[in-house]
Length: 134
Image (cartoon, rainbow, N blue to C red):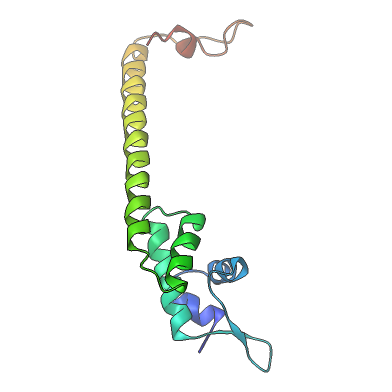
């Protein structure tokens, strides 16, 4: 049985993270006679799963859904596949948007290289942004 700080150390996370997932009910602890929260190996494995899922981009709601299925003795794998497919599409869209932003920023920087600096004049705060044509 591990206390909050011990569990955090073992899983290379923070005590606040352990408390957060305990507060959400995704992991559960027992209380020692002196009031410390104690986590067994099953809860350690559960938190390890949660942390891994978060690194893969799963939301807390996603993880809760996955854990609910597992807790009912059902395979969570179909849900995991469906969710990761959705997340992958979202990430691909964000990458596309970031590539477009990168291209705009590159064009802006290139067009601003030879322009003189100007003071604000009441109509323009920074003439560079105002003069940028996409």
